Amino acid sequence: MNPVEQLAQYSTGHWVSQMVYAFAKNAMGDAFEGQVKSSEQIANTCELEAQPTYRLLRALAPLGIVKQHEEQQDHFELTELGSFLTSTHPMSMVDKVLLEASYEHVLMWTHLAEYLKTGEMAPSKVFGLDNYFGLFDARPEHVDVFSKAMSCYTNDEVAMINAMPTLDFTGIEKMVDVGGAYGALLKAILGKHTNMQGILFDQQAVVDRVAPSEQMAVQGGDFFTNVPADCDGYFLKHILHDWDDALCATILGNVVKVMKPDARIFIGEFGPVPGPNEPHLSKMFDLHMMICLNGKERTMDQWTTLLARAGLTVKAVHQSFGPLCVIEAQRA
Ligand SMILES: C[S@@+](CC[C@H](N)C(=O)[O-])C[C@H]1O[C@@H](n2cnc3c(N)ncnc32)[C@H](O)[C@@H]1O
Image 1 (cartoon, rainbow, N blue to C red):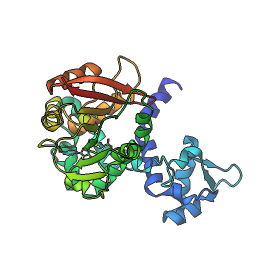
Image 2: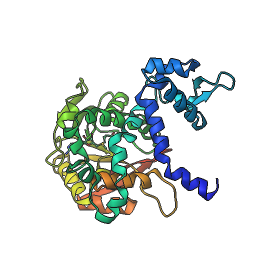
Image 3: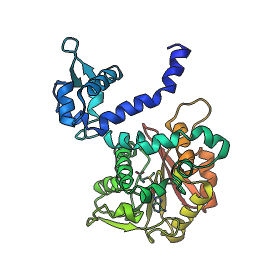
């Protein structure tokens, strides 16, 4: 690709994201039912207009999501890639697409250029909210969109966590999933460690939608005030990247205050952010956290400093095949 083509592609990235969003939002992947279908059949099933549906499918074919038939050109089939955009795929990406390409997220990203000048958070500028999580009150339907997307991220990340050769939960009797959304991570951990008990802790509006089980209690609350006490494991996945260092120190301080003396804290994040020029999801996600919450992804040095501020020391850094790392910390 020459520079003109490359930059043209970068500048129209939102076209691609909206094409994928339109496909997922209208459940078009499910409408294929594993068969070759005409665009009109897909349009009928999804209650869409026929011509725009044809034009979207035609444009999605070069992206590898569907395959357009050479002879019957109004006929399409789902590819292997496109099958991840069905609700029934075990690693379905639908919920992640519905969050990341949502109106709210796209609108906030349009604020990046101005953020560089003002440092004003996108939710404040765009929606008049204090921070990203204000969306949960302002648009209650966003709670479900967001939390389902978190489960979708977690499905992928559980495989990474299970593949971390040095990560071992032996000795942990009670694990808290701090800010655990719908509990996908905690349920996966408890499923593997049947003698462990768990507490799913998140905002009340989130945990109201989760049923407890014999192994998993559910507790609503605010981690800036307190977290469940007397446990020996605390997992914070994609929590600290949301917040600046001072707010992270408050959250960690609240954990340290009430945890058992020999408890371990597991921090799951994209990273640590690697050195110059090395591609890593954390470098892009860092911008997302910056505009949404003044949060950030951190280098290993930044993690060590932050943890020391809360009276903690790094016990181990666990990694496997993906962009997620788990930093294990304990009292210094
Ligand atoms: C980025 S999500 C991470 C969710 C989950 N840990 C995961 O990795 O899939 C952040 C979570 O923190 C929760 N949260 C935000 N502010 C909170 C607060 N003050 N107290 C408790 N939970 C909070 C949100 O509701 C959300 O579920």
